[in-house]
Each structure stands twice: as structure tokens, then as C-alpha cells.
Image 1 (cartoon, rainbow, N blue to C red):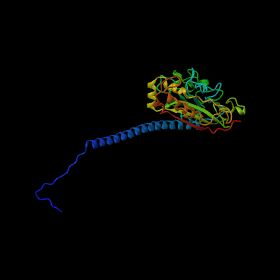
Image 2: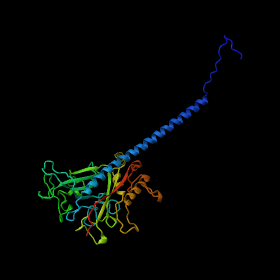
Image 3: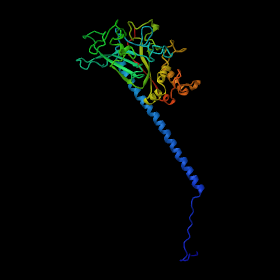
Image 4: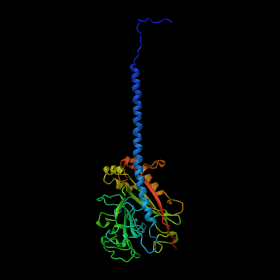
Length: 363
């Protein structure tokens, strides 16, 4: 092996990247950066949607749990009144959708309910008595002039059984008042100016803006309920016509096994988007969510089943791909033509729950 002379310089070979190699490297780096950006952006969208659903889930759980307490403690008697939905003189449904149609003049869009319950109620804080029973009411506020507009409200007005002033015709905060028994009814002492007007009315008048109301579901813009009878029928009438019953007289809620409740909930950001689109958009959206209308029968024809109402609302919002029917999320507008941002529709969630009343069968 020939040795290099000591005085001969070392020869080094240095080779730089070519222009083509640099361009390929930059291209690969760009693809990687764009891919990471897409993944991070998509993850943010998924996270944001998940957070919205967590918000609505949390609120729905709080609302339905509160209802569970109120219904569980409901006074189930035949000598007291209930303000519930039904035909004729039962007006809890009269503020609804007229059996699945759009909201008509004089209707509020959601059901109302009022009943006596053995839960703590609000009363004059200076009073020496503590209420063991209260008049509980639920409604979606219909006054566009109030901050609680299209938000679920709950009222718990403290009452006493007996031994107190029976001046029930006055809407006076200093008046203590007892529970009432039939033939006196909740709506019977709820005319304008009377103290229980707020329990059965839903307007912008002073008589329906009782301080005992609180906003329990700020995201709940639609509220509907119906009955599961002891004979297995799901209906909007709280008595069993098969047994010859035509009213609650003498039976109370004895024919009712459970009350089913459905609510539609929207998160604050989506509500703001809808309100920015149009002042009437959210009301028109609530109007598109059909009212409950029972179809009597036993498993044939159009007989209602558990979950039908909630499925109907889901179809209105998100469509029915199996039958090629578009929803509001596809059209971007309500049935009345009001604009609805599709991103806001995707944030709406539908919830339902049944509350067992544990009533004795009617005779």
C-alpha cells in the first residue's frame, strides 16, 4: 500500500444538496405541516362540538332530575286539582301546538303544567311558617320582552294545608294561602289579578311574571309531555276511555302510570347564532317541533310508541335519510322560511324521560 508523502496536502471531497433535493425536502415538510394543521383543526372542531353536547347534556340532566323530584312528591289525590293537558276544560294543552300543527294565534308553543307537590316552596322570608307543600308549575316563557324568553321556567309557590288566611282572590305577597280542594281549581283562582294567574298563564302581563318563577333551563326552548296509561296506551288524555272515563273527576291521575317528558336543548353559542339570524328564528324553530297527538289503538295503524315524539323532533332537525327527507340542517331554514344557521342546528339535542307516578289504579 502506497503511503502519502508527508508534505502532500490531504484532499477532501465536499458535496452540497442539489436544488432538486432542497425542493423535494421543502415539499415534504410542507405536506407534514399542512397535515398536522388539518389534524389539529379537525380535533378542535370535534372538541368544540363535544363541549357543546356536554353543556346540553349537563343542563338536561339537571332539569329532568328536578322534575323527577317534583313528580315523585306530587300529591296524588282525587280531591285536589291538576292543571294538565287534555281536551275540553283541561287547558294545559291549550297553550300548545293544536295537535301537531304550527303554533296558532293565542298559543304559546310549549305545554304547561301545574300541580301540588310536597317539596319546599318559596314564601315570604319574614313569615314564621315554613311551607311543607307547594304549587309547582313548568312553562317555556313566551314573552319576548323578558330575559327568560323561550327558556324553561319552574315555579314553586309555598302553600299551607290549613289554619291560615283563605283570601285566595288577592295577588298579595303578604298574604299566606293554603292548598285548595275541589271543587275549587287552580285555574279557577287564576284570572287576571288573582294570585295563581302565573301558574296557568304565559304572557307578558304582570299577572304572569310571578317572582316565584326561576329559569331552570336556559337552553330548553321546547317542552312537551304526555301520558303512559296503566293499560299501556300512550296518549295526551290523562284518563282511560276504554274504562268509560271521560274526565279526572273522582279518579284524579289514577289511570296514569307515568308522565313522559320531551325537551329540546340548545347551547348559548348556538342560540346567539340563531337570534342573530332573525328575531323570530328560534320561535319558528320551536314551532316546527310537532306537538304530541295520540293515536288510539293497540299496536296497529298510527299507534304512538315510546320515543316517537323525540324521533319526530330529530327528523325535523336532521332529516330522514332513509326516506330522503331533508331536515332544517339541510335546508337552512324553518318551515316559516326563517333562516337557521346549520352550525346552530347541529348543537341542538333532544332528550326524553318517563316519570313513574306510582298511582293507585282508578276504580
